Image 1 (cartoon, rainbow, N blue to C red):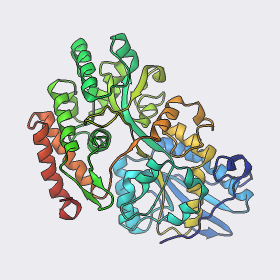
Image 2: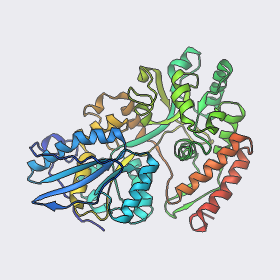
Image 3: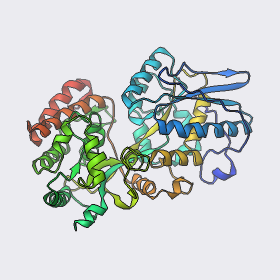
Length: 464
């Protein structure tokens, strides 16, 4: 289904200068529907002159901020003579549980009008026909022009179309304990190459007798081994991994081999916490205990770490985190490349292809991805703005770590993702597991990965 015109609101003076869709104030009643595991009961349409739409949030922090934003949206729309009521479905689940449940609801026709999900899920949902194509709505929306090229590139699906509106961006880099390294007399300047960084890590390990860096690896970390560990490293090697033009994966390359060899070197030098990575929930002893204590001072991480992991309300708070923790770009691994961060989509709003009120759902998504509503969400979730113009809006403007991440986003390397990513992820997990257990060195792991990935993907998705 394709919409030619979004249910757009007129821009107000306060936001027009920033290129956003804005809204004047007004008064409207709000009704919030909170559901538990029963989930949504389908899309809603007009009733008595009021259009009702439903949105589902499955993370508590996102549900909390959404509950506060909905009344303002309803007031803004009422001020324009548009009666829209938003029902919030707060269904708190794990990522895996939500993915299973929303897929079942899409299949049965009971999914809500709008879903808030990770950008990596969009290709699968769109390919299955569950999502509304948004090309026309985005091209007619002035706000779309302000989104960063890296974000737009990640959001364009293999068929060349857009099916979601990003409302945050993730920037992945290496987080490090500045206070710990400085106390050891170890440089905290940006390492230009992995050799330079490994030299520093060895000094740390000699002093502590403990591993000094955590990068997700192996099967216990699940999809994080792929998205938070392997992918950010291989993305900056200059080797083509996924070719968006052909929709195929290149499973053998100089960059892939170098990435597996890096894992092997870190293991051989006892710089990676191998045993923790082989145990269940490997993020707990590494990111939530040792990084917090400072005994494991470097961690691969994304912007979400500032809130969900080490912030005051995170899983493992670090007191004065912004003074103690800083970030490096990923060092160069291949000659001829430069240090870089990996940027792209965080969470996005997608419209159910079977929604009875798609224009209202699109309008709500655009409002949420603009101005003050966007600034409030970014601070709540610890994400970088996916578009320009938000840096001057409170409370986002007072978050230096997020502003720094946004600055890196402008020149970041996009992560290569496409159809078949789940299969590639599994092959990466298995290959890095062999390095951890000592069953393969870097070159052997690369060869094993190539064979497994080709088998899992099938000929149609593998570049010859």
